[in-house]
Length: 93
Image (tube, rainbow, N blue to C red; front, top):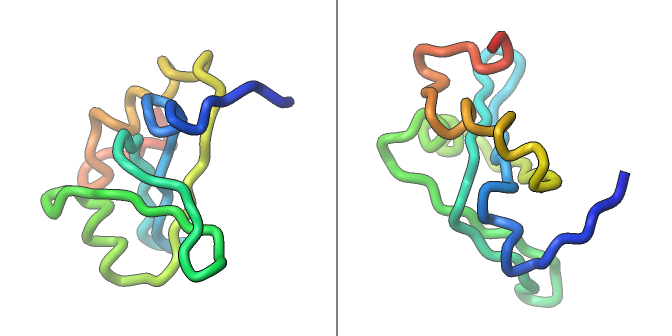
């Protein structure tokens, strides 16, 4: 399925950051980021507060994913921004 996305709006309630492994995984909505090119390579920069569980997981890995969704899924993504993966199994909700 394809949808039109304005690159300047892609981090506004449309993006999920995923990080972790089979044992410890978390995804969260992100509202701050940048897409671009650095040294001739595509790049994606995201900003995560130190207090977030996702930040803890990011510190332990070199890999993360960023997924962009059609705005019609905004309501489905709310739990990923409001609940902490420290104490909530977001996938079960």
